[in-house]
Length: 296
Image 1 (cartoon, rainbow, N blue to C red):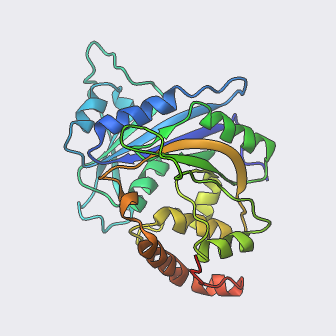
Image 2 (cartoon, helix red, strand yellow; image 1 turned 180 degrees about the vertical axis):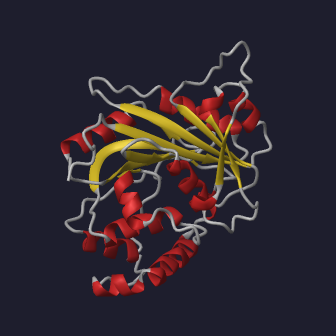
């Protein structure tokens, strides 16, 4: 089934953030400078500020019109499902002379407290209007043709719902880190890819683009999950029979720095995450003859 529903292709980039305004500004710039030609497509950028205290909220409300600003009203303890939280649209325009420096395809969401990654992304995606979703961390950087290349692959593969690419690791100053590249693999079936994941020889991070329909089909990010919420989601894509399409391009620069969770994701932690993911999906994985080997 075609994923576009008769509409022009639109890709929604989602970025949760917490106290990383200066990195976030670079991430936003990297999305906005994407070159789409010659494709006739659109994109938007949905940003969720999860209780930042570094001026993030003030920056956005001073640079976006009120119709592009939403506040989340909730109990403040992250216990209620994100779908049950109340949305409040801003009413006052706080831009100087009614003008701001941010593009009109940016939408800003504010939670007044820190929100776990799975919940933060689900909240972002609730406000997306595109048929496909890309996830960009607030400290990472898109390349200038990332949206174009994902869109081109989507248009060439109209029945596919899940796309992956390569990415490069850089340090906090965006300097390239040799021997740290990530390259996607080509698999012949969802089963083969799942086994590679649970062998611990293949993983997927932010180098993805997936259909909103597929996201809805599997129930979105599991809000009970702490770390590795992204890999958990992609495993469920595969369990549902959706093999990723590999695109041989670099989608983004993954910034490594002292406040980056990836620094702490060593081999033991990754194996622990895989055990948790396997346990949550154990019956379905065993029915597919997928074994938890952690052999790498």
